[in-house]
Length: 277
Ligand SMILES: NC(=O)c1ccc[n+]([C@@H]2O[C@H](COP(=O)([O-])OP(=O)(O)OC[C@H]3O[C@@H](n4cnc5c(N)ncnc54)[C@H](OP(=O)(O)O)[C@@H]3O)[C@@H](O)[C@H]2O)c1
Image 1 (cartoon, helix red, strand yellow):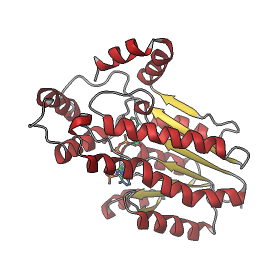
Image 2: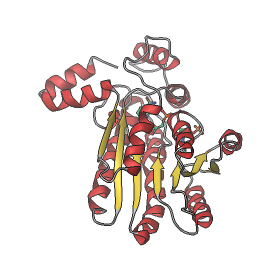
Image 3: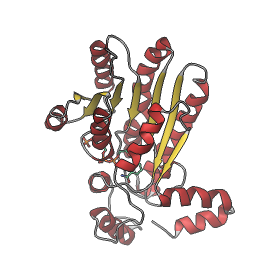
């Protein structure tokens, strides 16, 4: 009997990760999904997904995850989908540096740590897929999201470098850059804004009121927002195509942003971008 291909999916408690973990199981994958709370394991396990507790800010939990998965598979792993992340809102001048550091611990350093655990296994097998969920904000920055923009730009840099370095190893590396997708992302960003930014004693107080409304979903929703299945469509391609792409840009607004960045003089481009958000 053929073994099912195996994959680690991080951040599967909600949104894109939860959807992709379920869709992958339906498509015949053996899915090892990570969450941070015990109670989030239950619904996933009920659907045949093997779950683990892992927090990207906790290196020991990353190592324990990799060891436990490899023990279950007999030392092989076909794919890694780094997905778990959050957005830290706040103007750059209002970001405590430790808050910026924490954004990178989750969105960059934890992903790097897990990826480094997985590469030797894939190298030994001479094959593997690594897919990192970046964001359109890793290519086109928006105001009030400096920490998140910077973390995704850093992720882009690391990932494309790794992509070139792994050429010829049999390991394919792809980035997914979604625009607006329905998930718990905005609700979690709202919590991060309220917890970590002084929203009152700042020159940006009035703008922050608008940003809080946006994060609460009280403004007109982002145009072109899609469900998480749009991300799964390209994830499946990145995992199974004989020729996976380096970049998968998802949603019309994201594609439009990249096109305008290519076409417009940079001064004009950032003036237009600066009027949005
Ligand atoms: N939604 C969008 O519009 C959008 C657009 C572009 C890119 N993305 C990217 O898509 C990915 C998934 O986000 P989403 O939209 O599905 O948001 P989401 O519903 O908030 O899901 C984020 C997931 O990441 C997990 N997570 C957060 N901090 C973590 C940490 N320190 N260690 C491990 N896991 C952690 C969360 O776990 P908890 O439940 O424990 O917090 C949750 O499972 C992210 O990489 C995000 O940057 C989203």
